[in-house]
View (tube, rainbow, N blue to C red):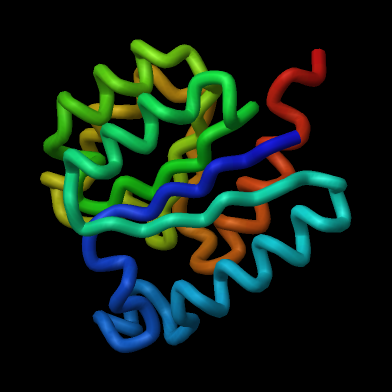
Amino acid sequence: MRILFLNGPNLNLLGQREPDVYGRTTLAEIEAKVREAAQKENAQVDFRQSNLEGELVAWIQQAKGKADVIVLNAAAYTHTSIALRDAIAAVGVPTIEIHLSNIHSREEFRHKSLIAPVCVGQITGFGAYSYILAVQAAVNVNVT
């Protein structure tokens, strides 16, 4: 099992950016926890972050044949990026949308996810634990 974790804009600032909303855990600390959880599941993890929409699109396109599942925290691009939505739909790699905060209980503009319709599921509102839940979801995405 190969899981590609993609993290969008401003997630490199975790731990210092709005800790009351996003927590005090850094992205590096989340990555370490993800790798530990994935190792227990015999899964390989590729963990990346970019503030650039085009780079995220390129990574999604490159995932075909290289990743079994994509876990995507598109951050603000969740609500704006048709390009990410189209890339997910085009490659056909099962994609799980994740968020640290509960986007449905926040500002109205955050309630609409443009990528949700092309994802297999959404994990939202569990802080850093959303990432661990995503590991569990990824290794079980094809279980019927």
